[in-house]
Image 1 (spheres, helix red, strand yellow):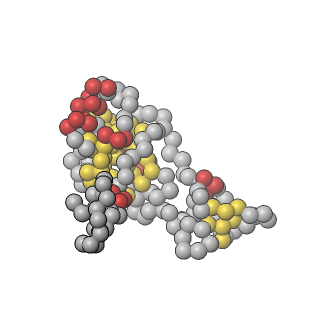
Image 2 (image 1 turned 30 degrees about the horizontal axis):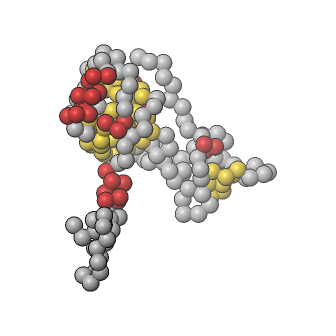
Image 3 (image 1 turned 90 degrees about the vertical axis):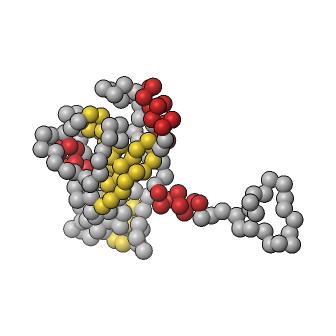
Length: 186
């Protein structure tokens, strides 16, 4: 097992965090600005953080087509993945999990793996555990062998793809002339 450490993310890296003089800290991640209490953690993100997903979201990424899988097999040996390129993957399964990233990693690489997620994983899938603050990515190499991916920039999720598809041009009124290159009436 790798010597990877799971660290709790801090608020100082968040865009919604606002640190003022005289020990006043604010979070503008929710509906309005919220002041940190004196009992809130000084470094770690508090339990009430609006970005936190409770329970975490579990996403499984698989190859988007046979060509992507073939290209991956050319560059990566099954025994040691050197390069996992995110644009070859798409979301194939998404659910709310009951396990955090640290527990998933420890149980997935142990003999008592059991059924961690309700999805039949195949080799070279990528599993994401997203708590809303910091997502963790794991590459499924072999039976009971997951590797943490430090650099994996996932493709857009299913929700953002459907939102982008809904922003197409509207059809021109019947009396207007169609411009060259305009595909709105097709």
